[in-house]
Image 1: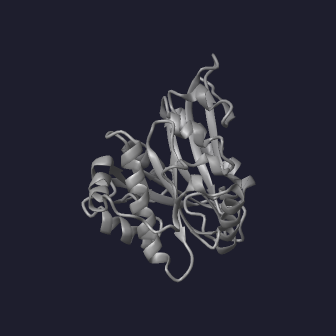
Image 2: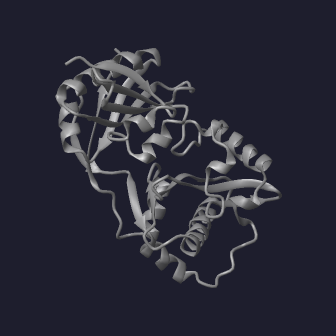
Image 3: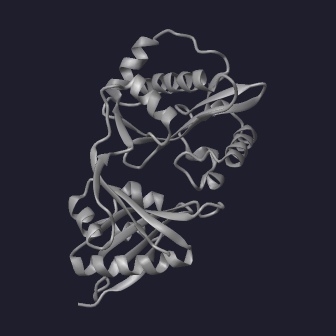
Amino acid sequence: MSYSLIEINGDNAEDFSDYIDIDMQEELDRVFFKGVGATDESGAPAGALVYELKNSESEEDTTSRIRLLKAKNEDVENELLTEYASVIRDDEVVESFYESSDESMSHYLESNGFSLRMSEALDVAIPIEDIKKISQLIKGRRFPAFIQSLSDVTVLQFRSFIKECLFKGRKGLMDDLAYIPKNWFESDVSACVVTDDKVNGVLLIKKAPSGTMFAVLFTAFGPDYQQNLGLMMAYSAQKITELYPDDATVVIRRHSPMVKKLTDKFFPSRKGEDVYSGNRAEMG
């Protein structure tokens, strides 16, 4: 059987719902998330590959993170991976990475030139029950006036802080930070440090369509930044337990030593799941 290959984006991602979950479908509306889809002779979806470009607009080497590869059979996987290798040349991708709990996908990638190793996932899922424990410890505590919710910050204040983050190379999980509007985040549970009418720190939380919340930018500037990171985490924890149901989950990606230190301190019993990870050079 022959297959046709098409680009997947936010406009047609739902057509591939058998292969791409609702959270990933929404991601395909973003600038650096891209997808390749396969359809059979009848036009029915037969598989999808989704990847995220990293450092595409910086002076660093552009890399790609394969977020998903799912297909009805290995023939389709072969077609998708071949097309992927072709399209990323246009973006001058020098290396591809993946991290997945999908064993079959990981071994398939290994057979196509990727390294394979077991590791602890950078993402750690924190259930509400753990967040409630933090809230109980600080119940009734009054936070300093400079710890505020994102809803209390103006768009101008927010954009000024984002500009500073971009200048200092602080993008958290979002290479497309410059393109993300303030209302994309959960404003009531996202926390900010505001001093002299200027935002100096944020813990920005995004609620995905599935209901899972993701901490996507957690950073602060100034001499008291370490203390303020802890205050923002405590503030957001309190707001989340007030506003969200007991079955909610917050996912934190430990993308820096400081974030890992804080998650280990606040949630010592929570670790990332065991995952397969690896990489492949794409350009010599």
